[in-house]
Length: 130
Image (cartoon, rainbow, N blue to C red; front, side, top):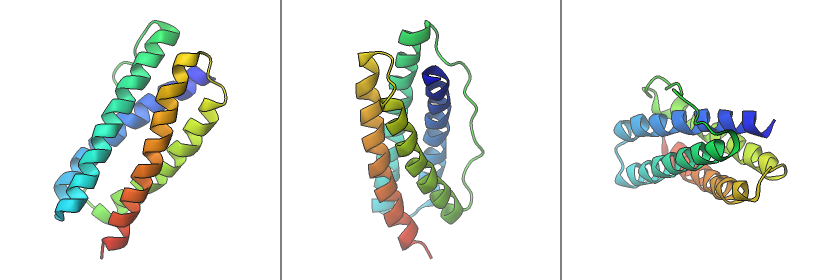
């Protein structure tokens, strides 16, 4: 169960990274660009930590995660991203309660905290959109 949730988390982090890379090009305010850049750098870090954890648990990496289509409607993309970040907090909280090895705790805790921060940053952007 933990490994299947971890595999989904790897896929989600990978897709989030590319969504935010696309979204950065769509916003104009420098602060929003900085917020989004911060988020996608975190997402890349989560992806890498989770891949390493998957390798520790299974002896293999998750190959060929699928990318989402680029963002074209900023408001709907930010809204979806905000909901995904909040869902990620819940997922990582549940996963923290069932870590199979001690080395899984830190990456999940870091990702959970980052997802909360991302939700705040995305809320600022969403509330500033027309």
